[in-house]
Length: 383
Image (tube, rainbow, N blue to C red; front, side, top):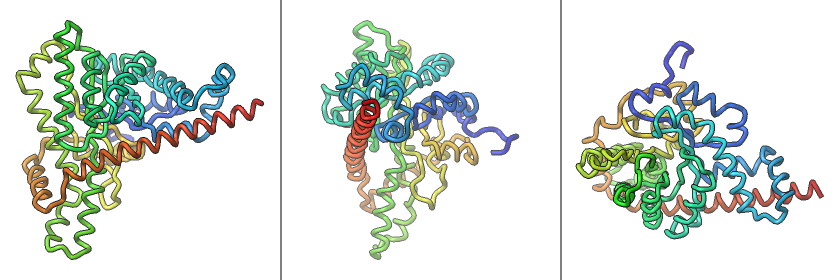
């Protein structure tokens, strides 16, 4: 992007898409970097996850002064409670920076996401309890609690919505899982409305993961091609296409739902639609454009939470244009061809949910280990 050319990130707003950043770090918030992205790039939200927090807290000295202060008052605090104290302070600081965005968009954007413990991914009651606790601890209207879109998490999401908690449902890979989540959102809103409560201040996004699908499918394609599969040409033609096709078809379901009389009744009562949020949008395969999963998924009522490197790349050479509703028939044909060729998208998406939950557990354990080591380091320094 030259100094005189328009910023593609800021142009996304023209097409109804909000760019969020998949990153959080204390120094990033404190030194004005987050505020700068809001002002210059039209950034409208921030997401976090255990891996992001592990990188932020487990390395460097950003958190040492606060850890020292906490340990002076609570020397026996657990690593888990210490992490949560630090994370909540980070999230609160980010919500303050993004509050003007929240106000300017009347609650559409300006959100910061904080995830429940990954160890609760298959525990409905535990997830509900933790969602309530974190929601009250942060106490900011522009917070979203991240809940995984497992069967148990989806039920927890329904309950949280009925209680007025804004939720980012994460780890969605399949159309069926997304349909269940959108149904849970409608049911949660209906329950809240029937109980006589306001539904206008509830927001939600459904985080639909993209590039990881191509990673799995392309790997299966390459393996079969290398083995001399008789359908090698047809298989190769699907490389890099299945994930985007899957996302486009999911968006068509969203459009069907928001056009329904059922949704109109909720919208008339002030409800916000649950927007699709494209996640895992960094390009893993160097053969593809580094902005592929941003360029190809631009459309109204959507969010793209973009990793920092991809955010910079899209600013530099991304193309902002409406792409999400283009070539939908071709997208359906891609999915049909993938099924014909036995690429087992349903099995792949289920594997990705399982792996995603497991990887977040590993990252969370590493995070707690890092915080525990940092605690020991600070205690030793002051002893």
